[in-house]
Image (cartoon, rainbow, N blue to C red; front, side, top):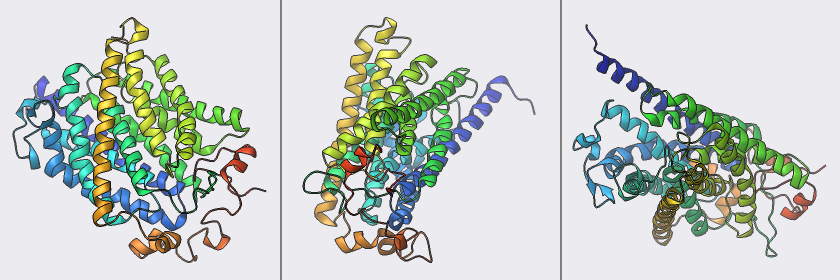
Length: 449
């Protein structure tokens, strides 16, 4: 069979996009391990179930509704109105790859946005209402933001640059998480009346590190795959800038905690790298490797500062999702206006692109925050969003699913040691004074010797 050059290029691009879609989908395993490791064992099965069902409910919702809203025929720059259930009306996309390949790549992004929120609401949110949120996040909240920037909407027409989603995925997910956390409230025992913060220890930091490595690995599909072409030689630079930003964020997160607290905090090493990845995602195709190091390095410091800030305002986020994705998705979007080789302020481009980026990330963030806040408010007033005090004390694994993550031990792997709850008499400040940064549950050395 004779194959012409166009067919060959289309075939190669299809294989590339499908491979990258698989990498992005595999990031869900990273979310699951990271979040399960950062929380207490009695809730670890519940969080894995939530991430797993981001994939089930979220995929179906994106198929039924989300993809059409995101990429359908534009209506007033606000939303799409065709392509629901992949039923047609998407010819305007002018794809060189099959529509199905494009859809599955985009669907993996949609469920990633929902999974950002899952970690922030861990250990106290009911399972069924979370599924309702996931359906709306993948079917409406994320797609509207995506249409504005990527689907022919008003921000894309303004010239906003968000190559793979620092704003659309990460800022939207992070600020959605903040709205959810504020309406849900902190976990019991997290904050004392005097404002100090109790340690609710992470139960398996090795699991969290595995999740971090998987997320870092999956980002090589997330960013280079957004070219939609394996023949685009810029994929090599995109992979390098992605990797360097992750390395820089992890390094500065480590060094900053060493300098500030006297010990290198493992949780901030992990979240530093993830913050670097969230930040570089907007500009990965537009910045130099040196700029990527700066963007990632700043992100590694910002995440440490942001974690402390959100604890001070009693926004209880067990995994640091708001700091990683909300704060650094915002920083990364703005960084394009500073570091883009074409149009960036530091490369002689003036203020225009920076203004567009600021407008864009503000609009996307406000939309995600407000829409999620409305969803959680309505769920709270109707079916309720929070488990009872007794259920929270016993753990969501047994009460929501009827099975512990670790069998054969009462209260989970740490229950017999008495370490599966707040550490009595150990407030946040004493851990800081001992030289260890304590971000909520993100503390490896929770037993002081």
